[in-house]
Every structure is written in C-alpha cells, then in structure tokens.
Image (cartoon, rainbow, N blue to C red; front, side, top):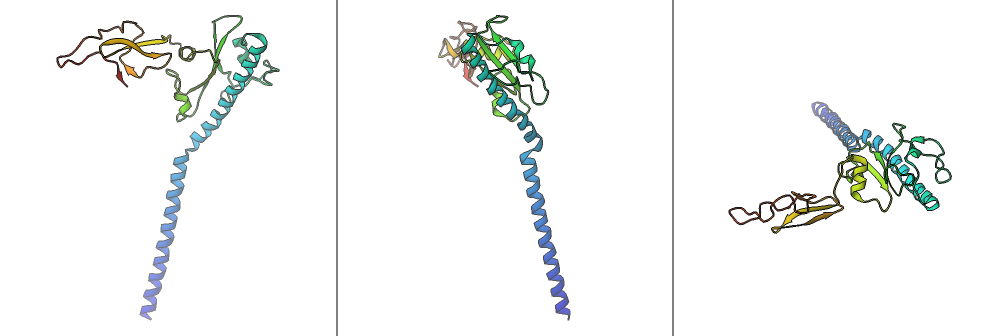
Amino acid sequence: MYNKTVMKKLSTGFTLIEVMIVVSLIVIIALVLLFGMNPLQQFFRGYDTVRKTDLAKLKNAFENYYNDHDCYPDKSILTQCGSNALDPYLDKVPCDPNTKEPYEIYLLPADSSCPQKFAIYANLSSTVDVRGDLITYCPDTAAVYSTDMNYTEVIKGCSGQELCQTIYGCRNGACVVVALDSVPSCSPNSCDPNCGVDCTKKNRRGAYTNECREI
C-alpha cells in the first residue's frame, strides 16, 4: 500500500513537472517570436512597402512624361496627391500611406519651366530598413531619381547641403582625388584641390600626419 502511494505521487509529480517544462518552453518560444518579429516594425514595414511601390510608379510615370514632353512634370504635380493630375501616365498621384501628405520632390534646374532632372523622396518608418541608409545626410529616406541626377544632387535635394563632386585627400604625401561623386571612405578629406592641409608633413617617426585614413 505504501509503495503504491509513493509511486502514485512520484508519477503525478513527474507528469506535473513535464507539463510545466512544456508550458515554459512554449512561453519562451512565443516570446522569442514576438520580440524577433517586432510587431511595430512589421507594421512600419507595411507602410514602407507601399512607399517604395509609390516611388517606383512615380519614376516610371515621370520618365514616360519626359519621353513625350522633353521635360519632367512641374513640382506642383505631387502636391495634387490623390488626384489624376498625372493621367495618362499614372491613374492616381500617390500620397504617403500614413501621413497622407505628398512625397518630396527636387527638380533641376531649380525653378525651371522645363525640368531636366528629378529626385523624389519618401521618409521611411522602419529604422532597420537598409535602404534608408543609402543617402548620406538623409537618414531613413528612400529615393528614386532620373538617370542623369548625380549622387551629390540627390543628397542636396533631401538635406539642403551643398556638396562638391570631387573630393581630395592626402595619400603618400600627395594630394589626390579620393572620391568622385560618391561618399569618401577616408578622412580627413576636402573639396579643396590642395587638400586644405600640408600633405607632405611628417611626424618624428617619418610618417605622414595628414593622410586620408580609411573610416
């Protein structure tokens, strides 16, 4: 009788422990999935998917418009988001899916009645979208632009910063071009063709002190 009671308790206790272990594992897995997926980020990504699709549609419409008119549309066209102002090139001018505001646009030449370059920007909600880190000085921003719009012009359009296309830096004691229409990968650097520093300067060990070093 005693042995049966003990065995029953052991059996019941072991079963209870098993259940607790299984429940704990389920809770842990659920928490991992919850935080791994990050519901808020998933929600933001939904908006960003729409924004990227909108940008692609606008680029296609602008290029088709240019083929017919030898100019890109006026910047006021995007302020009419929700309308058919771009018809027949686009049925409906898209608005930002969250704010319902028009997308930003930058045209060149500025204030021209016949723009020859364009860049259109969307502010991304997701802070983990790698595409949002592609434009220097414009974090969490995606863009589409005409093929002849260079990188520095794209940056100026969203940041307002005037950048030089040719960037210089010291290499082996001489001032050379370290970046051309791109973000420099070394520092210090300068828009000055003379590098703005003495590239020949050395320290007591004989090493150049103003070298443009990788960053």
